[in-house]
Length: 455
Image (cartoon, rainbow, N blue to C red; front, side):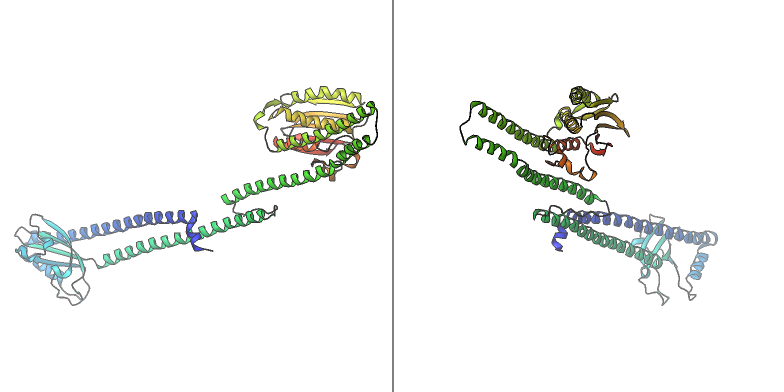
């Protein structure tokens, strides 16, 4: 994978920024720990120096200067062990003191010096460059008591702490950079997968989908939404292809019939009444064709969601009640038993005209295919707290294996070929149901068919 692409990814750049910020925060935190440790060590050393100086000053006050000098000599005696504290009593000449300790107006002075700057090197184990913390106390007689403490151990501890601080900061930065590169690489892989899928779809493979992982992250959420969009596009394209094929197949016969009728009529002279009959039949065929195209246009508009602006809250019982009065008379004329029932106050959000058209299509089919002596039931109720509209009849029904297929455009079963229609009624009902997020269910009514819209 191209490294330049990796460095240009937003994930890598954001990770790099966070790496720098996190490293700075970590360095600041560890630096504070280092400073706090150094300050604490210095405070502890100063306390020990004050304690040692206090002991010597007590001897000076109790037994005068000779006792103090003897105590210093005893403490400076070489006993073969490495010393931590160093002692010296300087004369009254301020020039003998290092510049850091020349402060006669101060009773006590702390300073960090080298060992050779203050104390005589009469012990070969010391090189003279050892760091010492010095406390100089001015005595009443003008002399200066100097007590120093070796800082080698403390400096080693601080050096080790500083090394840890720098090492941890660098390690953190390197690890975050590595994580940034890994994250950028993973992001590029996901983006490349989307690009490959898009390329295959552009090449004509409409069934291709963006791969979804088990991580369920934002890329997977985006992938699922894009896959849903691609599925919808494929569905529309396949539907358009099927519509084109079905139009070419189903409308060819009525157009040929219309043309042949006109051609036969023109073969010889006929009377006015015959011409009038032929024209009436031609107009009827043209109306059937127009109805088919109008139904296709309605389905296309519904599937495109062009009617959402006309949605209102409506009472499903009141809507079906108006249609029930109309179709009850039609059913009674055909010798069909009519039953209608509704529960009160079943409200939904939707387009009144589209829902009325869908219910009318269901009732038309029920009346068309129910024989005399049969029964039609229109029911509005709540099933599992969901508003449900059902139309049931005792007609021939639809086989279970064909119930999905009859929802497609222009599909008509063999037992429906003798009935007028264009095979678009249930397709329109399906489009209205999908627009209203309702589930269209076709079930066996034993005998007959039950069609339900579950909102």
